[in-house]
Image (tube, rainbow, N blue to C red; front, side, top):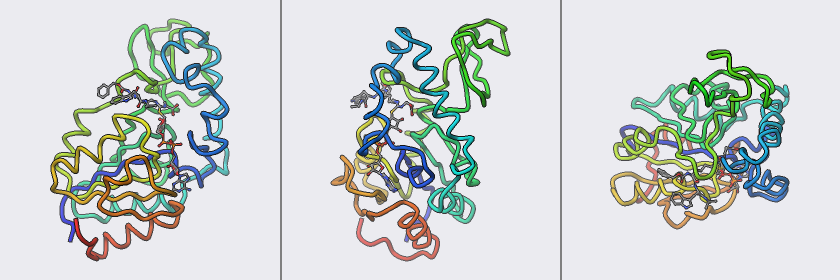
Length: 242
Ligand code: BV8
């Protein structure tokens, strides 16, 4: 019987059924773009217009009426609402589908599509429309210094201390829709296992890179396995051996 705080890690797989591409599945984002060009600081320095266009395309996708939270996002919002202890949703995703589903304690460790950051004054800015190499910072007025508020490869993910504090205190670690390729997120399950106090569960379409580190796993589309698992947790059904 689980009692206590829950930490959930999500990746692109939870948004796949909402119409947002994953990265490493067939036809995914990295099959169409070289991540060195569009998801590294070096790529941004080489060709900022290319990187801004890459994120503008993905930001515009969020405006598409067909892109909305799916039953997996909604189930996690229900779990946060109905669980008697804190639920922290750490997402690698930069879309806003968890928030639109009603989740409130959401931590975007890789940043957010609908935010920008001014490299002149450091302000983090709400940003709904296109961002270009001429965009003005609304805070300091400087032109051409606003970048996507996104964590690229080689950059330090956001709020790592808060994440590890939550991992160290959790009674359940749940990983959903992530391939387990990208660190440090892919290392969270090993960190929880080392403590040995909390069950680790993977919900994914297929076994991830870290599958062997999970006590339990349920494979299938997130919109199917996540609501069922949340029901199991909320009804207090035993998760089985840890
Ligand atoms: C850093 C930008 C230092 C935003 C992204 C060891 C330790 C530390 C670092 C490293 C290390 N080894 C290597 C590194 C460096 C590097 C790294 O991990 N490289 C990899 C390629 C080996 N990591 C970094 O550079 C990170 N920074 O390390 O700083 C540090 C570290 C710790 C402490 C202090 C300092 C920065 C990483 C962030 C990079 N930015 N994106 C954006 O454009 O979106 S990463 C990119 O990959 C996205 O953010 C994405 O979220 C993330 C992970 O991908 P997934 O979400 O897992 O998506 P993927 O397509 O891979 O998988 C989808 C899964 O869903 C699949 O398993 C599929 O089966 C499943 N699925 C599909 N459909 C469904 C489904 N599941 C359920 N239902 C479905 N319908």
